[in-house]
Length: 561
Image (cartoon, rainbow, N blue to C red; front, side, top):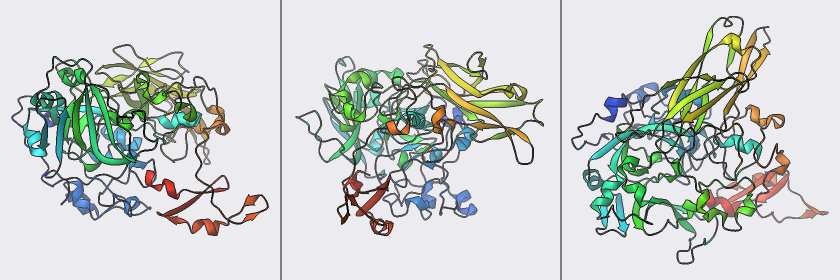
């Protein structure tokens, strides 16, 4: 049976506060529109319109998922794929994200998967609560839902690598190319972790040096070996997990939630169905999907992914250096709370604005801004003259603060500018501030994982003459996500200065571990292959690739992907 039934609304437990739908609805439709071939064909319009849930379109997988473990799950073809066909790592195009602004359709929410999407069921899945608790529990989903009063609120999720491609244009990181849309907002419903832990007998007065560990359901490859903990060595397969201080978990102001709904419906599979962790104000990488275990422990978790993901190392630390001197295990480099950030959504990349017929008009520049820690975004500023003068944008603040005064969501902003002011303008810059007076830096600071990239957002403005003689302003974003071409940062001459590196050329990129060379007959001192020979090795069990005219056998690395 499908992991999400069509009757997918969970009955509330008698809430007295306004519901999420009453405050932020109606929610955008969450039914995906798969592309059934590379030309962008979609299922029949009438089937899409009558569909109530993704499961109504199960016979229409996206063509890129055919032949992968995720073929059972229909996905929206408009999502930009960042890591090829599999695993599924995507962000929505900015053109789609800006349509709904505050609340993102669940089917267009960004996704970060490390492996195949688990096909779990509501009826069979359980959550185990253990460790140093007085009352260990294993709860069915129905028991979990009935355990405590429900909490429902909007939360912005952001991938720690949002805007990473800009860093990859300076120097290659060890991460793939997120554009500026690794960010989305849904209204989540669940129970507070605090209430669950109280039910398990946790004493909220005894939180010193205690942590809560969260472990997901999936098994993932270990890419670094046995790890630094001899008492708990990492095996060939590891779980995705993390931990937070127990004091944070027990503080109701932080709204740490065990969630089972998003935008009024059960979670979609790619977003953790049937249950996930939500830590408002944190990076998305800490919000464990397909949650299986919760443990109260007297130390930070020893989970593989807690250490070998979501770290912001100093800019001089290379891939080779990171494996020396315990850099991954130093607590000062962990990335938890979001930093201040913003981006421009209008104009879009390559958008053109005819000059003559608009010169006496205005144009609305718009975008998003977010921060972490429950802080409020207090202002967004826009400059047309290289940062000499700044204008205040109008903030569209839809989120209602919590009873503790916390803000867990992005804002969208707008600024009407005179088209005439674009004459001679080289770039449109935006930057955001929060209530702690955190402000985006002017220049990026490169780091090995390419995380937390939050320098001011710069949109280039070009004055072009078209073939028909018409003069236009043409706008250029820094990059385009994934393998999409375009962006001013892709040109070597325009790469910005980065802390510790300056303008790096491609020749200075990281030297990656090479796959073993393939044995064959030699001609002189060189091993020669024809492309016809290489093309024979193109199955899931035998893969050769060509990089810079060298042939590599990548078969032994397939299980890592």
